[in-house]
Length: 394
Image (tube, rainbow, N blue to C red; front, side):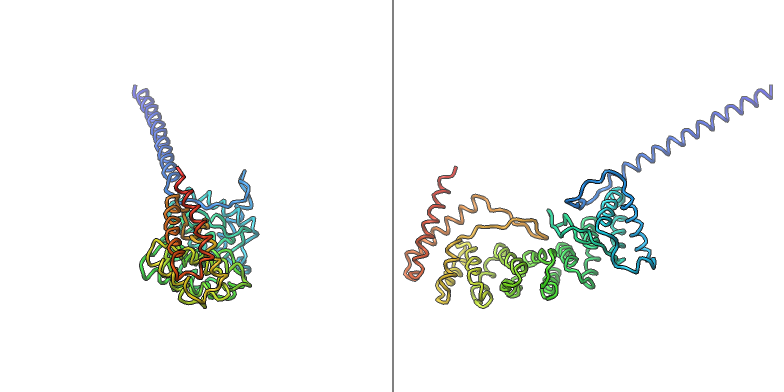
């Protein structure tokens, strides 16, 4: 009987152990599932993209190799110190794709730490893509790995990105890196001191002749910084760049910056352009287009426009340029590093046209403007047509 009882006890113990192991395995599996769901749904910033590239259809050994290379760089192995170039463009793009896939399962802090570590490694590589700004000022494509890393860090952890951006501005010789770094700093610190610091850095950017002689797309996009910070004091420097007829890319970027500044700070910019004719010497018709931006329903802007038109130093060609587009409602809408230019509504266009028609009618009846009557007549008829169109619109 004792033997039988002992055998039964052994069987019961074995059954108990099997049941305990089974319960432990089920518990472990349930924990693993919960952890997977939590990590998979961890909050993430919008991911950057690499437009123009075909979708990946399987695991790429090139991408995996790219990850290994970057790990070796961070570890500072001597073999990787021999060249500043990471790899060919295709490998860099594939590594970015692999990192994006892997980072989607990482906590934000870990992803930011890895991006920061890679930036500090100092290594770089081309992507074969151009500097392309997308919605919200983030890049849709970056020309180098470092530019992409900095932009991506700005998405993942803006606070850490500011630290790295300031380090970039202290030592980088890449205008594209400067453009992204200044965007990060400008949006991170909206105080008067913070914006003043960004203004000074932006001016330093356009004072580097080597960068201006062969401007990158990032450098040209960085002119938006003057609009965002409303740097009216930079208008003379921007106007000097507008006068550079031999450098059309830089001249156009500066022209657009001043034009957009007229939309956000119209009166002080107009006053400077009108009071200092030498700023746009040789570009007088451009000044005429700028002044045509004025909203004459505003008393201050109307006063400046009238002073401008009555100045006997204005050439007929410049006055024709003004009359040909006034009131200038042409807007260049695009994705910019920092600012947006929303299209004016129909109501706003109607308001501006009605105000312009009323003021031009008064000029046409004012003896002070007699010299301009040959220009004001066609302008008045054009504005009357605009007004009729507005009034007949549903």
